[in-house]
Image 1 (cartoon, helix red, strand yellow):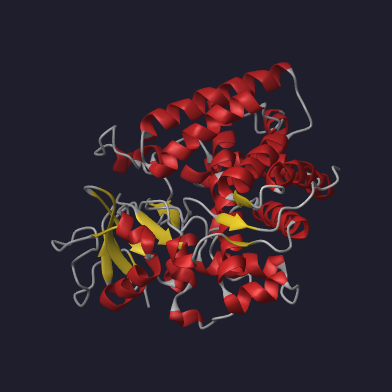
Image 2: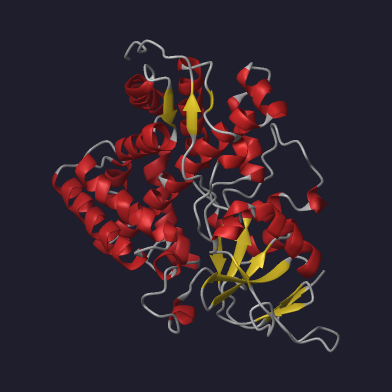
Length: 414
């Protein structure tokens, strides 16, 4: 297969985003209910490149081929992350614009700007002590478990996964709770695409307060280390790097924990093995990162000029989105069991690969282990087919995860 910038007389002069036919909407509830059936139908009809809409009248090309995604990830010259020309024609109230638009951060830039931003992020994350992080998760998890262990039932999203990821991320970033609550509300609105413009403003104003606080009161935290980094980021640049970490650290991490717990509680073959110890929590996380990654369709690129890939012409300056979920289940990679397999694309790839993947694994694994150690007889509280998924083009997120268990005495605090 070839990747070319020049027309070929044998190549079809068409594109998934130029098609006159219907596009597949990723923002409708029907897609959230069963995306994997949609991915299979996409593959059968279109191959690796699919015409979709990420919001009403917002077309994109969805990449569902594993090796196609790898080539795009590793070719930022032809597939840059900068959306500024695309967004000129997007209305300000478009629900996906706040999540996709250009910002001075590592995610939306390439070349020297990307390197400068990423160096600051990597340096900030690089001094996070794994042992200290383990203790932080434990210190947060035990009081949360104790708050519902005597009730015999709980919603593991509202009562455990969200408050845990929220508190742990705040500790890592050195963010006070009152600032973080506003930042988290803003980020949730952006992922949902409901009130996204206001959510983006709330996120940025909240994190600006955090930056001002850390200038006045430095700490042993990621935010302070980025502020003090030799790249000398400006205040807007620092705010946007912290916002990137919040975007990667609340929704995706919460969804990773919840989706792994769902697997353990609903999959008879896998779940029983995980709960009785014959498979590890890490194995469950790998399975989820292949089949139900917390960010299902996310990594955006915007070709600088029309480009031929897999016999299809992609137009310039229109979004090309990697479906990590569909690529991971591409039959060409030929694996149905993923324990110990790290070949998934859930953390992206190429120059923009997530720099915090090892920390995400550690937090999610510790959070799940703390819960299962504290409540070993935990079971799903409703039939598995009654679980519902949040609507949205980008994430894979349950609305609730109800569980039941024998009422238990509180765990000993750390």
